[in-house]
Image (cartoon, rainbow, N blue to C red; front, side, top):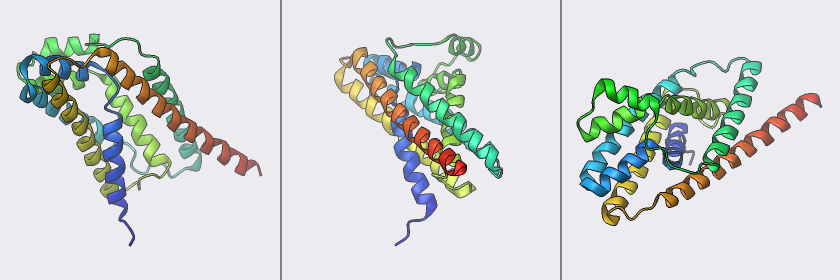
Length: 221
């Protein structure tokens, strides 16, 4: 039985969304702090807000790559950029030593919007992180340029929905673990998770690099 391409795209998005949400950052730290202080429900609402903004960023990233890979030269350029992006992110997460509780861009957005609910706290914290959009652009470019998903609205929509579900899955697990542990989850544990995520991204970068080398060798032959 042949599995429809949009089902594969959804599964790829689900797994990817879960794994790429693990690296530590302001939203994960917020969930840990607020979950330990106010409980599972509050942390879960923060997670829903963060997932909603992530979903918007992810959809914008995938929508920007409609029909852009018609040219072989452009496709090769995007593949090279996606390799460099995965390499940069992998090294960044692998070398992280401390947890950023916030950033200047997030602080500026929060000062303007003044979020008062748990949902809006999560939403605004992702909204104020422009790196999140750039990250999703790199992921979208990697998936589409390497034809891991089809460049159709159905496949891209399935992947986006899968990524949102995967990201929320991680946030749900983190919220529940924090509420049970009452703040016993250490920042060192999250730093180690970030290191594992960095190693995973470096492995992806290695695979992309091998593919690029093979393509160059075939063209020369």
